Length: 284
Image (cartoon, rainbow, N blue to C red; front, side):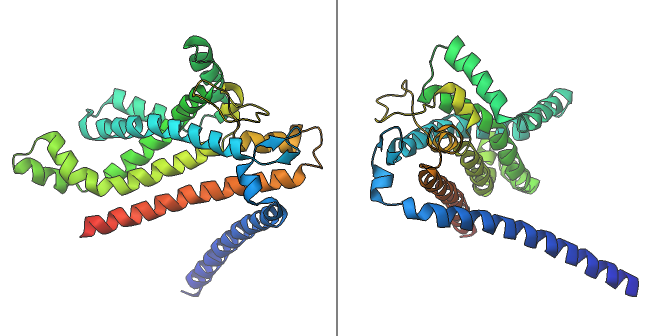
């Protein structure tokens, strides 16, 4: 008995130590970025165009470019991902082909983002002749986000009890009616949460947009979806590693990193609030 208590105490101690080290490392990174980047944040930094080779001015084009690319990513990945998850879980027959499809989707979620970037160049830039543009970058990120969206949506559908479907079917409802009225209202919070988390990951990616549309320096806003664009992740990458005056623009790089972290945090917070509100409505 004493040995079991000692093992339990030691196990919980190790787990608490792991949590402590992870949180401590995260706090150190966030505090470092905040203390070095907060001084650069002001209205001009957020709303002005970059000047003099990005050594002065703001990051407004990068903010707009990130928003537009993320929007296109959402338009592609959300309906396709959720629709694919509904088909796989509710309609597809169990068998080797379905298992193969699921396994392929899970494997695709682990493919490095740079591979998606190269695939986007071949498919969207060269084959479909969309050129290096916002549209090409958004579609590439959409493809990268699809496996995450499908997996998260299917897991949310699995959490809905089978009795909900059987009850609707027993009352004479069609398959789609039972899904629409008895399944989706209970699974949508989880589906949206997983989808938004996938989008927040896409918003911080550099490699896929590096080849498909991101530009080093554009002192103006894109006029259409066929134009190149600036984006916060690529802007940060250039400022931190490729700029001709790295030490001079270091505060701007930290400010850009802080803005990107706040953007991703807001997207995750939106996912949490949306899930909470939808669950509240469902319980009523």
